[in-house]
Length: 113
Length: 111
Image (cartoon, rainbow over all chains, first blue to last red; front, side, top):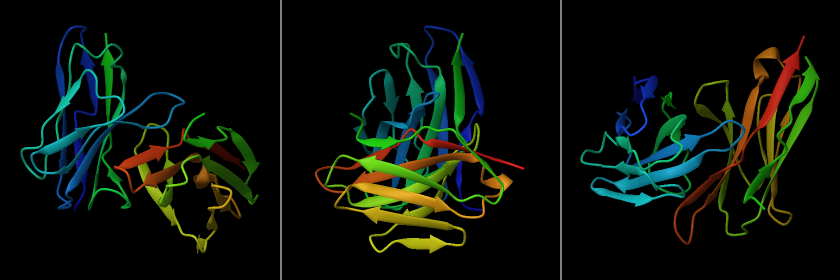
């Protein structure tokens, strides 16, 4: 089955710790994205990548970092510099950037204690 | 003003009702439009793309009005399983990539 996987599903972190969220896709998609969703709000773009070894900041990149060393993988690190990291994090991919449908992973719910 | 705006609802309707959602967008350079469905605590999933000519998929009809910059979603003969949040999504394909998600409209269909 082709799709996107994210792990872990739930993550708890102490303040001051960095944490990395995993995102893997086997859809052979070039583009991948990270979003954050807070209650009652739309998805906000953190980072996106059009192709391997390339990525761009989205609207709320501060306190986050990413890498795209492989086509299939786009991990997101939430650093201690992110002031309000508790949220639902969604990874998505699409064939290419722009007009294409985005397919989402099941999400990681991060809680900072 | 948000670039994509939706009525947050919630819309509470009985089974069998017809319900319509509207979404307005402010950037006239927007090129493609979608409706996604998101169940509680789950990921969004594509419901349908929205074409200039309008499109229908079973009980669902989506329409685009470029002149007035809004898109709509009509659900006929509502089912209990239609209860979800419906997200309006707008892609600005030129001037740099940009996908904007609306905050969503919550729908509750009751027996």
